[in-house]
Length: 152
Length: 261
Image (tube, rainbow over all chains, first blue to last red; front, side, top):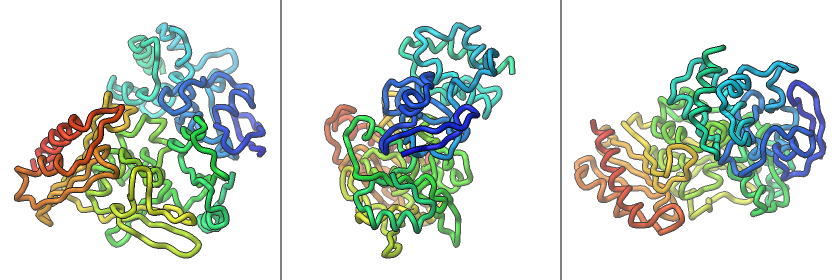
């Protein structure tokens, strides 16, 4: 079936099959590989995107369920060459090791700061609890979130 | 993929395609599809059915639409009316999962570990089932008939959960390797209903369906033991039967302290 959706501010169309995930459609159909494919069961958060402004795992949404809706991926965060403040904070804080979890964490962090501009450590912990860093670089990730909150 | 735009249309499609797999947030269903554990004839996408997304309170009855998410329960006015359900909702997965996962989905999956089930059972919740034939309600305890099995007929959809909030002190607790992203090793909801002079407990992951135990408040001293005795746990990858029974006894003791304080 053909779906129409707004992705990163642009009207897009894609051909999907009934059981296809939004993540697959983004990566394979729409040329947006920033959202990472890892656990395919909502455990790791690497595929975090915003669906109608809500943080979701793209692997757990059917592509067809996004028909007529709005999706923001990590590719949609920067303003041209200008990085999003959260992306900039991850660079400045060195909150990147292998980098695989980073896109999902960046999206989840932006979602947290949009809801809670000055989060406590517990609030950061809870908000990012669905994003796993296999390099275990959580201390720098916390630094990045605090830095992003401070520069806002 | 069938995407109805109203409940009537959804029921007509379900009657026409009884093999269609209903999907709300997809947090359970997509895992099965992604791993090719299930290949349904058709998928019934309920995301565009507005009637399922709302909750209301009428004549003391709280009606929670099947499409209400854990995030909505946790952060909305429902949290004050169903405190144990809100606590349970906060332990579901991660923010990403809570934004998509729904009450109706938890009931449809009918896992013995379903986090929303024990709190709803201690509150005596009923399930509203709709089909083109009409609407019926049944107690949640009867709806859950086995591990991942419920009493839905092939042409029916879960339309809502109905509960009369008891107002009794209540709590929910869950044991797992970490606080987030955990399928309960064991879970417990407990309420101390002084108005009815009754203690009620329901536990998950310690039997084929969530268990239910009730006793007069006068039996508070032995209640934790009664809860542990009522469990029929098994050894599995998440824990042993002996540990589960022990943990339930400890949780029930703590929950009693909290609710009777």
